[in-house]
Image 1 (cartoon, helix red, strand yellow):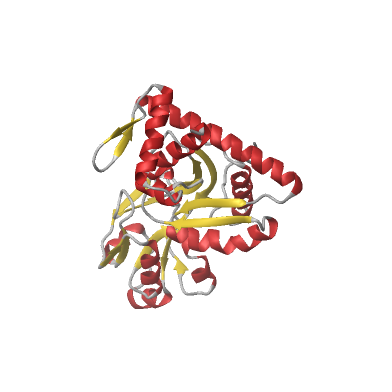
Image 2 (spheres, rainbow, N blue to C red):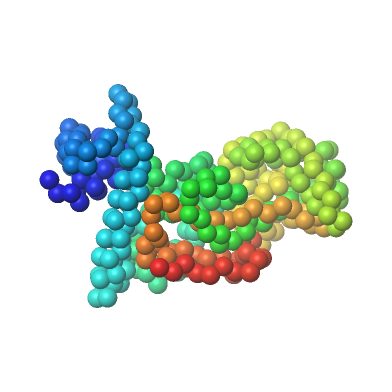
Length: 311
């Protein structure tokens, strides 16, 4: 049996977590995929997968073999792309994962410019505010906001997420504008439940001391888009990532408040699978967006810019 095809099948079994999913991808049967895995294990003389009735997991040998196979297949794909690009433009499908609001406000609006530069690259964008497993989803890269929990991922910081405290003019006219963080205790605060410290808002004073306010209100949501709509509709005050509200601020629908206090920032990273070397299309995509983000005051990294990705 073709060793390369067995390697490709094994990699997709690991990444999808399912024999049946790979069978559907390759237009074959689940038993055929199972036979390929048995043949591969017999060829290697090692157990790669521990199977149960509903799932399977990698053995230590399987994990090592997956990493090597992923590297080999990526190298072969990159070689194909490099050879192809000598005669044609870089092409292929790029799978990207990102938080919902970030993708809606800062990836999709910039795709037209990206396509002008790389018209033959197809982008498949998966938007999800929950954690997206790169291996299971098959994503080439993901944008992550906040400190990274998985040290196995290859990460590159490409910007900073700046926060803002906002309210609508109608809300401020009705309830007044707070001038000190502790005054928020008397206001309706909109709570985003997707954070670890759900209702704790931190403000830094000029002397470096922090004021931490445990806020409350009559609306909470795990959707940043729902919080945005609520603050625009005058339901309360939001402590949010500023990049969601650029259009609302420019149109006068919202106002920044408590601006004399500094708010904690979060790193914006792009992450890759640990067993995969960034392909040419990934490099071009990341470099394009890093350049675009450097011009956006709500994302621009305030530290010394990092070097661009290269092969």
